[in-house]
Image (cartoon, rainbow, N blue to C red; front, side, top):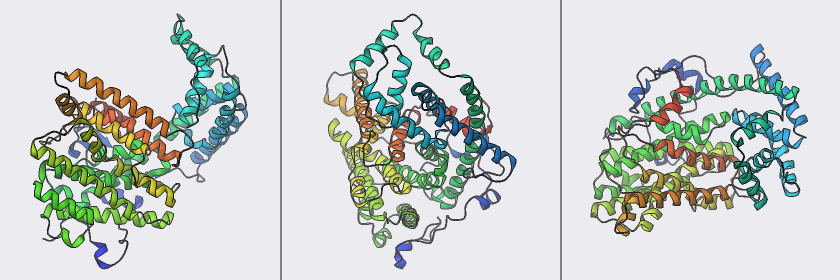
Length: 513
């Protein structure tokens, strides 16, 4: 069968990497492609929403025009003030908190790191008996940054006593306002103006990335060949946008959306499309990454494998060029693990027999796809790539498994049945209730919520320093877990209203509520 999707088996020619066909980026895309309205993305967003068009930038660069020079001056002014005022313990904490809440902290990371390093030393020797706000803020910011900070009895007592105060709801707000002097009150205004400018830039950047991802997906052609599969590039991009939030990671977000799309497509093949015999053959091809054997698969599987092979080779080539490490073996291994887990589930449910809840969850954290995503993120970031860390990421470390557990259990807790999906792939709740005769849905739900809480504790622990992974990778793991409740919070119409509300202000110009 002639290939109708734009993929090629580059490895067949003997070359370890394919020609990179995605290198022509920003300047040509808007000329060639008009954004598809979100309603046609099969994600149930209002037809009245439209993507903003116009000149867009991947990231801010300081040019000679007045607006960029003014932006650079604002940055310099705020950095200078942050260095100066950050010498004061509580002033520095309050300023960091304000910067982070306005989501512009990536501009000030060096200054923030310096202040928090001093605050870490301070937390070991000093605890204010009378200042709940200072103690609580220091504790949160340091823990958030990955520092080990003890939540000792004295701190707990301070928090408990404050909650007994009749005005506790306004106490922290009142204290925070009084930490700013005249100079820093002016600084808050400057910071807010900077954040407004930055938001417009970031919004434009994400809009362009959606255009680029949508064009890539359209050119790939899989939605035409596998018609029952999901066709939701906007939804897939939301995962990349949420876990790699730094504006400087534009290219990584675009590249990450590609394997995420394949997770969904392959999941659909296993869940609703393939026969068990064909799924076994498909999994064997992926395990061996056997291009010749792929020719004997059904056409839709053959096309899917060739697309997956092409995406994996292209991403590996880009990583090798930038970071000097060829990750193709690691990427192929994580895909094989995913399909093996999908096949285990397919066999379980073809037999009509549910596994134990423990067996289900052990396999389910692999079939969640989180491992595929985080392995790709690790290499795309290019931070801390070493023989030891590659071996670690290849073996499903706890930072990955705890994130995957959160996703799998949240997925199973609610109605995870997506649009146009008729398949049934079981759930932990179902397995738990079968194991525990007489247990109600509420019993099972409480058990799952407790397990999610435990997984969060483990994930938080794994993100504390020192750990072998970069801060950006740790934050990506946390962001995936944070995103899960939005991505799996379906309503009765299988829509994602909470997620839609988050998307509207960030990606759309004209929104009908």
